[in-house]
Length: 269
Image (cartoon, rainbow, N blue to C red; front, side, top):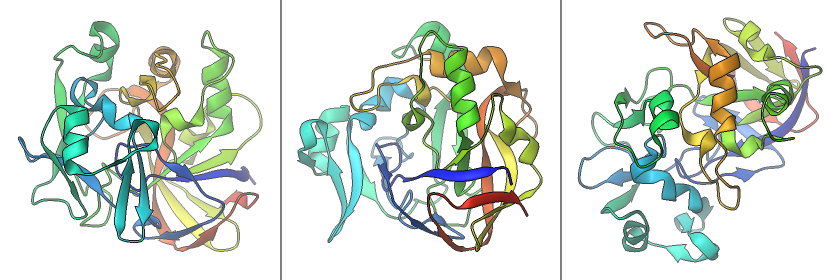
């Protein structure tokens, strides 16, 4: 056994604040309700993502949830926002979408340049196309599941000026309670993990971190140590064809669907 499930998270609207849940159904499309919607930039046609903080960090002042009639966006102070209200907040014309547009992509600002030059700098960016390791028609940048351990959170905190690093900054789906320090997730790449009696995930890659962990998340203030520590202490080869990058957690695909709950044992399958 490598640990137990500590927390479950889903993010109904991409790049907005998520919600912790008491149990989750896991399908081939990830946790039910996760990344069900996204915001489309009406100027470029790209998916809006706080990975480009200069344009989109205000999205992390909003919380996305599923209402009886579809997605519900709650802006600062909890006020509901429609497309026009969200456009006013972010300063660009946008629309809510439940299906990726043809050739869907987003811009991912180079995180080292964001650290060095600041949030408002025009830095280089990679173009990320959807569907690399996720089912077609979803809004996942790469894979449908993101797993993070408490060991990684403790290790980042121990190497930072702060005493704790909030899990919300890294936006995982499954938080696994593991003993000791270090970054144990990287050893799982290429293997399978069983969660409880049902779910089996195949771990396919370490998770490269963008600038998002450093940003203010709702009431959480900006914290550059959430990325700077990883840049200095946990650069690993994550994705083919790219240099080692700051990483925390791993990406996974669903081999066997089912339900996951806090307290479920996690073992190498």
